[in-house]
Amino acid sequence: MSVPAAAWLPAGTFKDQVVLITGGGTGLGLSLSRGFAALGAKVVVASRSREHHAPFLEEAAREGWTVEAHELDVREDAQVRERIDDIVQRHGRLHHLVNNAAGNFVCPTERLSINAWRAVLGIVLDGTFSCSKYAGRHMIAAGGGTMLNVVATYAWTGMPGVAHSASAKAGVLALTKTLAAEWAEHGIRVNAIAPGPFHSDGAKQNLWPDEETEERIRRAVPLGRFAERDEVAAYGLHLCSPASDYVTGECITLDGGLTLAAGRMFPHGARRRERE
Ligand code: HXC
Ligand code: NAP
Image (cartoon, rainbow, N blue to C red; front, side, top):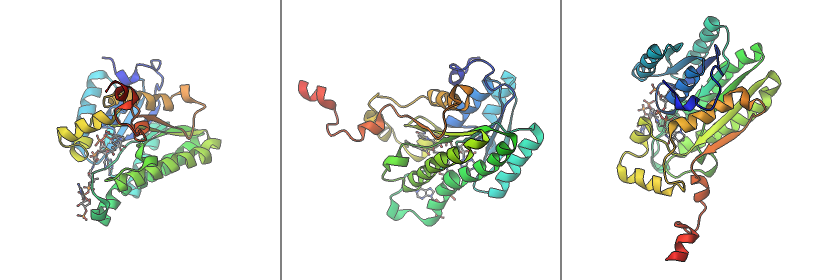
């Protein structure tokens, strides 16, 4: 069976390499998990809910991929350390870490409770810190590795209604650049991707629960559509692959031009205005 996210890299690109993908059982994380597995990696997915792991485990059994899944709350620093130490002990190495897990919902800032703020900051920023720190220790000892962080363009534009997520993603972007510089001497590359809107159950539930909102967002994207998860994942895989060996501290935007369009003064564009 062909895995679209893996289509642009040579077969066996990640052969026998070990990758940990947080939130790797759903949405974009699942596309990344499938891509790594199809390219030969041993894939470890980790998130809170076993239910979210089942589809990937079943697919892997059918495809003959080497994968495993674990319950993990990335907000729990001790749990993260234990999980990562265990992976390295059993597999000998951790070659790649993908910090994909996230939590989000839309809420005006004046109504955001401190628990709500901490829930999102805890998953996105603290979780990325803990996973990076413990994976980084092993990668330093082993002489290298790659990390991929999933952010969003509002890390630098901001976005009304998601102060928690925007602040957390901005922190992750800063962490990406900081660790890229700090750990380059150890052969560790750290990059990020900033996707625009794509379909996932989590995003639908928390960000665009009704069709009208979804359609309004779609119309704001200059390329006129949401991203495909696989096309976003393909860039993530590329950044972790040897094809990107000289790339570190970079963040690739994959948003169909949405960020550029945010600065447009004439929403329908000059051409349409001339015709009218
Ligand atoms: C206001 C809310 C809320 C909401 C939760 N809270 N949802 N406040 N509006 N819609 C508050 C709760 O009342 C509580 O505060 C605090 O947040 C913690 O809530 P819990 O339910 O206990 O949290 P928890 O079980 O830890 O769940 C975490 C979560 C949830 C973040 C709240 O949404 C989640 O599990 N999300 C994972 C999936 C997800 O979000 N995927 C979307 C990714 S898309 P109080 O004060 O009452 O105790 C994305 C980028 C999109 O990230 C970019 C688009 C371009
Ligand atoms: P998703 O399917 O809801 O993915 C979120 C994942 O994070 C889930 O697998 C969830 O699994 C896991 N997770 C949440 N809290 C966790 C915790 N405390 N510990 C461990 N795992 C946790 O949503 P998605 O849209 O694919 O999002 C994937 C990434 O893309 C996120 O970083 C998101 O911010 C980013 N992104 C999404 C969009 C979009 O339009 N969808 C745009 C830009 C960026 P469990 O519930 O099992 O824990």
